[in-house]
Image (tube, rainbow, N blue to C red; front, side, top):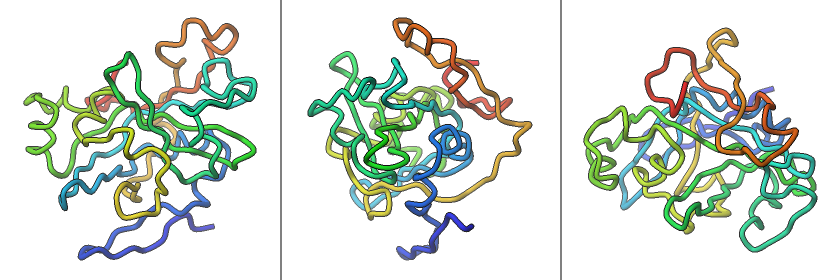
Amino acid sequence: MHYFSLESNGNECMKLKNSFYRRKTETVARQLLGKKLVHLHNGQRLSGIITETEAYLGLTDRACHTFGGRKTGRVKSMYLDGGHSYVYLIYGMYFCFNVVTRTAAHPEAVLIRALEPVEGISQMQELAGQQDIKKLTNGPGKLCRALNITKQQDGLSLLGKEIFIEDHLSIPKQKVISRSRIGIASAQEAVDWPLRFYIKDNEFISKK
């Protein structure tokens, strides 16, 4: 099965199809590594290669915002079908970008934790107030600031013109490291689930 569709916006690129996202969340989290997240901001492509992700497994995952069927205004985008964005605010300061997976009946998502900057780097440095390229997008809040992703991008289709993910690299299984997720100390039995994935030896991840 092919999970990519050809889109042309001046340059030809391969956007991930909805069918890519509507699979098992852990699988999507692994296979997003090496893909390119793009935000078209003021006509310019701001993008980076996805180097680190975390899977959140919905109703049975105490670390997930929809655990137990929780429904609030904050999480309504997680109840969309896979292939939409879910953006939330943490600490009243930082936005985090997530990819909604599976179907509306399974409110699950993948957090994009880190990117390797590719396009629009000088603009990203200006937006983030950070000149060190290795510190520009090595965290979920940092990458949102650099790509100017805010709550305005919440609930958007990832097949749209504003924010989307392109096929780029396929990372071999032996190059994918899995570890427990970060910052979920109160998640009880879910604390140690190995649902954080990153590219081995990549310098643009949040934490080894």
